Image (tube, rainbow, N blue to C red; front, side, top):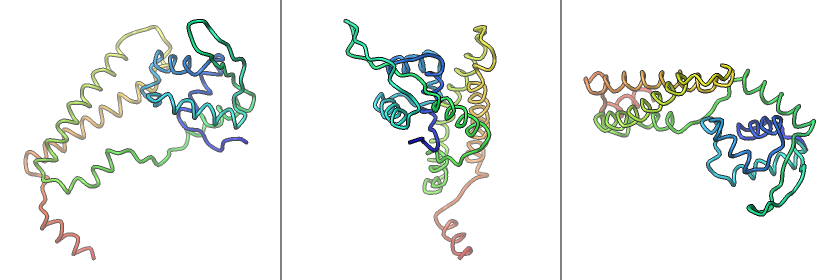
Length: 198
């Protein structure tokens, strides 16, 4: 049973197993060590195990060996299959070339921001802007640290920096408009606008 499409975590597991056979703990450790946990959610080990089970069931990975070390419980080492390599390259091409409609929570919250008074929205966005600015500084510091790695290994960090910088600029503009009174609304004005559209 081949999987039709991959998730970011499934793609990354296959990519790591293409590099070398690994057990789940090794996969999670490498994801964090290589900074890929910025773009792939591995916070919950259960999600990683579910992904491995799906890949195994689909025949994209196989069990290479099961071993026991005195210091650790029994560990299963997985490796990429031929079908897994084909799926990896197909998914990678699709994810790189085809934009996908995603539904992150921030735009959903913005779609309902009119429920707050302007001053409360400004305060919430100011808190977000501070957090996003900290993330931006961290990303820029990471890119400035010349580790000698080829640029291709840092493309996701470059992308995240650009997206984060754009969000920071946008947040600052909206906050300025809210604080200056250029962006304002009331319940009455919203009800009036809704009635006009009916």
